[in-house]
Length: 154
Image (tube, rainbow, N blue to C red; front, side, top):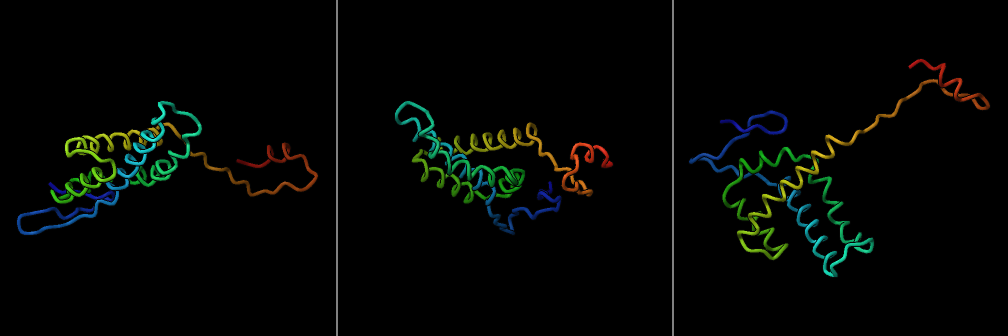
């Protein structure tokens, strides 16, 4: 079975004779977002309260969110081509950042992708980017803008 990249090109796969190492850049971006969000929540709940003074704790998570969801479709390609060593490196990254056991790190990684995918779906499905309407006719100074705007063909 062939693995395709985001543009639909066939990617090489690991075989017995060939070792192909793929960078897990997008996968790492997703984990970074989830790690930063987890750290922000942990820090914010240290006093058992969540309020506006905790907002600075979330800045790293907010800045990591866009890179995490921008090309999230590439995560499946990266993981499909990942080696056991790649998986171990991801797990170690999570363990180092959040001081977790192997099992918790594995669970965290699975949940991290779920969170990032949910954010991506929310942005994709529930936000609309409105495109500005460009009018070529300029309104002259002192004219009635509403009259001229109505007269401009759409």
